[in-house]
Length: 272
Image (cartoon, rainbow, N blue to C red; front, top):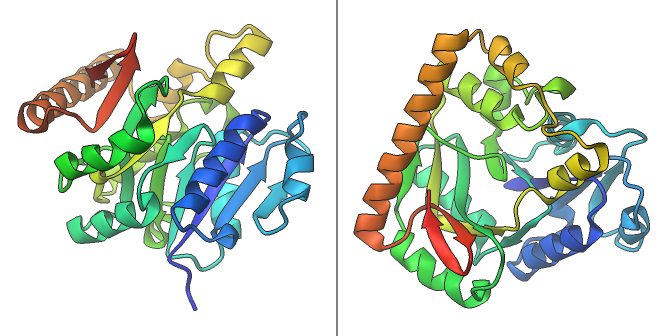
């Protein structure tokens, strides 16, 4: 029998967040065998923790393959799953998060889909806030956009355009590269308000930057060159994205009082 989904979670240290992420998924009736943890050569207690949880599907890499490498590895190991859900480890799942997201994707004809995000400090009572938020945002869709914190890819998309790019120089831009590829191929993508995650905020990337002293993990100019964009095209692309984001946010906020991406700053919400 074909599985509806496999959840692929690349990890590099940060065990505290991985454990919270997995626990939140299990609390939403996700089966342990549908969670695949890709350990990108962690040096903390992550390997020992995974050894104590053989019920989780898992893969240990001898070297850090990066985000794109782990995503592709996970997609290949997902077997015949209809959907592959690529998920950060620094998140908490909302009510029925995975099934609700995929239900919305199928309802709206999307082949790549992301959930709404509540991002930043968890100082607002996520468990109580999320159900109320979902009632207000149900049926909301941002067509043409998904984000790298969590995005589910239908198996047919891999067959059409291939897997996420494994080039390590893209560090931090792998999701955008895949989004552009999907857009150019006419693949319907979107972000939906029927599912929500709390995102603590790029915990692994921040830790890597601190350890290495690097301002960025990838080469932004190299990323744009891979897309065939010169300076003018790059500026136009960025401006279009910002204008579309602001329009979505304004329309959603006017209608519901919330948006599909909200940042928690100094005890208040910023809609983006």
